[in-house]
Length: 344
Image 1 (cartoon, one colour):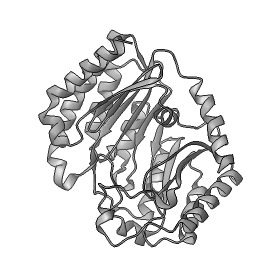
Image 2 (cartoon, rainbow, N blue to C red):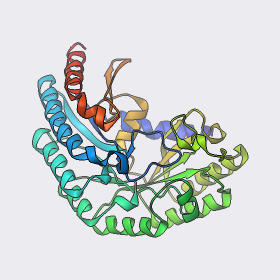
Image 3 (cartoon, rainbow, N blue to C red):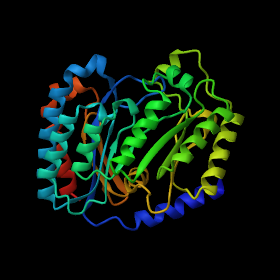
Image 4 (spheres, helix red, strand yellow):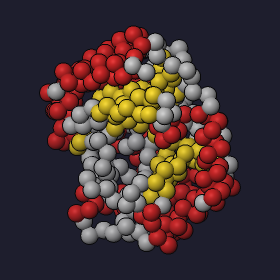
């Protein structure tokens, strides 16, 4: 664990030393998913319930992009990284992705962009049309997240894809020219043994994604997992899974570059992002270490305004309908953000 922590710190230091003065990252939250996973506590809503609000949500988001561009112009800040997360952003139809990304390019100065990331986490939401739109607007990092390569477990946790869909989506992305792909795995999923987890990890290693993120299953209060008979994996199992991961990542040339631990995680263990050298995610490090201002848009976005050693936080509404109905307050929050930045 000491070796892991020291290596992460060394790799983070390289990235943090390169943050541009007057730079910010932009986070855009798309709070829609095809289904809600049993362990999920993120800002996401099942489109079978909230899908009818998707179009109006996107219309409002376009206006928030406009407001954010005005804020950046008036404060003399520029954008280094853009991260579109959720939820599952690729739940949106391709035409809406085109409109949102087009508005970003029309309104923001894209000349300093280091990373443009889109979470395409659910393989069942990925299509050729959507990948074409992402490439069209310069998205250079995506996530395609199997969570496990065991189809039985996927059904248990509420995922609507299987391993065949994941392989198909990954191959599709490679053919479209995406050369930095992240894949997420979760250690400690219901009824999975260390050997089952190792099979999943080895299957991902064979694909050689540039980033592999391994999470310890976390029992959050907002997750439906708490209402089931499932229990968190034993700490001995979890240690075996994560120790194996650390060993295999080192053998395969992946370096650990960001790490965090959540309350109520299996075995009280960590989440670690591993990367092939040269492909570390700047945004992931920035959001963990809180050294760069992040201006958040969309559903559930949390802006972090870095003022020396102090951070001011401003939150967007989580629920799509609340975001729509209270959009005037969203715009006022952008004005509040500008006041705080100017008051530095």
